[in-house]
Image (tube, rainbow, N blue to C red; front, top):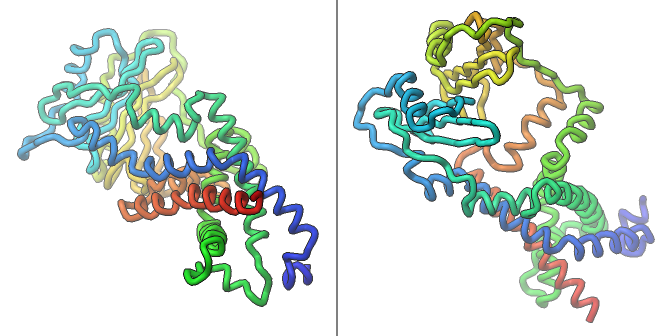
Length: 371
């Protein structure tokens, strides 16, 4: 270890790690470039959706009050007879319309409604250039198989970044030189410095993106691993009473009214219908706004679908989180930059470009050696 710290270039372990890092980099170069470029664009996914489908997110109100929920649902039923309500999201600061999910068999529709007139504005297309870009980033345009392949490649990136950090170490005497780019040097040295400095300064983010990429592809094995290290808190939704007779004629607005009475300081954020005979009705209330990253103001109220009685009240602020819970909570938002404002998204997009920078500079270094 002492010799490696002082003279890493002459250590035999470094030669082995260099070959591993080199060939993994060559094999994954195209994947790294694609993932980096698409990821940098997709951090603006919400903004791009608003630009592509502005009529679904912004409406003119002129101070008029919102239409009552029964009117919203009646218009949806008129436009889509025979379809069942799966869930409904109330308007938020970022989306001024009602967002409703309707199902019938394997058919699933995402429908937007005007908050004042209750008129159906339209359906979110199942495919668009944004969804294709997202499919490329997550699934390599190959569905579930592509996602598994992407997960394996993300695992390889973890190994490549780890070996890269070891290879970056230039020795105690000159380690600070590898933090910056010597612009007075020749182009080959500048290329080396760019590769080295970019890898060092973005290492933490690159490793986080690779780890979360594995989690997206293999969620259950990943959760099992985290749970083995730090037990995860398991919360199960309560169930409605088992009954054979038909469900009581409660409407979604009845449950929302009950929730408003129980939580007068909060506003409705989401309604989720019961799927099975034992499922409960969920009404999510938020003191500030539903749909943002901060869930500490949210309260979940579960109602029996037959009697309409309250089964359970769950406040997010009262959750006791383990280290594993924190890891699972933050992996997604950190990967997609949904935990902050536009400044975080811009920063994440710029850091995401380090993927193609590392791939291109690494290929140039290999090409120079090969020649």
